[in-house]
Length: 260
Image 1 (cartoon, rainbow, N blue to C red):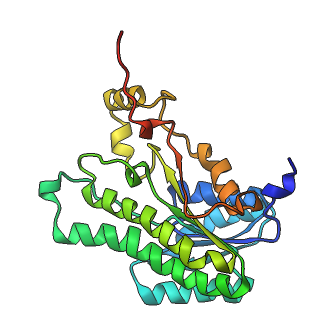
Image 2: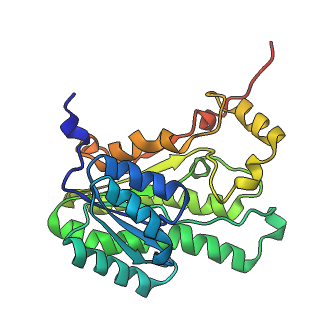
């Protein structure tokens, strides 16, 4: 198979939420595949070190302030990236948050914070970027979902609702923009250790319990998603749209270990 199917040389990728966590791994993987990268954070000063790392890979970078809960911030950020690079070929809608609480303890503000960030923000960033993509007749939009896009877990009510919404939104936007050469897919990680859930992974008993429920017998490592993000961003996925790609070690199968 030709490497050209996965080559992103000459492409520009906007990755939201790149001050830490999986967003940095997504940006790094795309840069290694040849893409120039626009990085975002609510405070772009926090991106300076990572921007230098991406630049050391031989890629052009541009950092911009972006608060996905603020419509004007979205318009300003996307406009700045378009002015700097002249185009956006790939969007990775990664910015997100979680407030982990039992359902009876979730407040009105908790719900709004999670849904405004993970779902409403993702839609309006996609909309702003798609105005350029549909005009040019080309684009790859990758919405970051979660295993909670397809499965429910206690303590993750609003988060699961937002990620389930991302899956449905992905299908709708794929239908909206497919005739303009824009694919829209959802990349759904399983259980990966991030800054949001570090406390869970400090509990060895919980990690052992989790690992026993995953067919691959371990939580995900950030680099486990490198191939998937490049695949969805590249020509190799040109006839794939509206789909959810689970990278979860198989936990979404619902399989549990049965002693015989």
